[in-house]
Length: 210
Image (tube, rainbow, N blue to C red; front, side, top):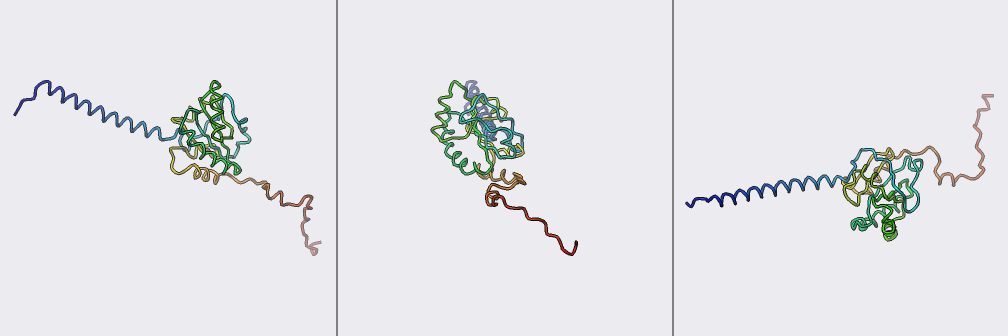
């Protein structure tokens, strides 16, 4: 049996150390990926105020206009390939729900120095809803970890869904819409069906009661 030299023992030790390092690296990467896949601000948490340095595609909705609405927040950047790939789906969902009490708001961390590129991104992808630029502080509060990221916010201002959640964006919107309280006022359709100047009928009384 050939004795193991000091050099051989040293090489064996290096191999073991290297193997352990690879294992630790794999664990670290797996943990990091799992954290990244949580999609940022988690379900049930309150959404932060939506603020930006400026806006593209018009001014953002006011707090009064957002009251009781379902909000979809889309985080993107002009240089982000997956953002451009995801945009057509967002446009499709927007067109489906824009008339059902769902408000879309886009946010990008990019500032004024890249406004032409950000505007070109919106124009070329067909995104027409308001988009805030220079929104890095708000995106930090949303705990944004990757782009694109999307959150669905319920009428109580709590997060209903993010990219790390189960189900689809459409399913999350439907869930949030079910939690919207119906208003006591008449709908536009009901009001349109009511004839103009219609007299309000007087209550019927029993003649025997006179």
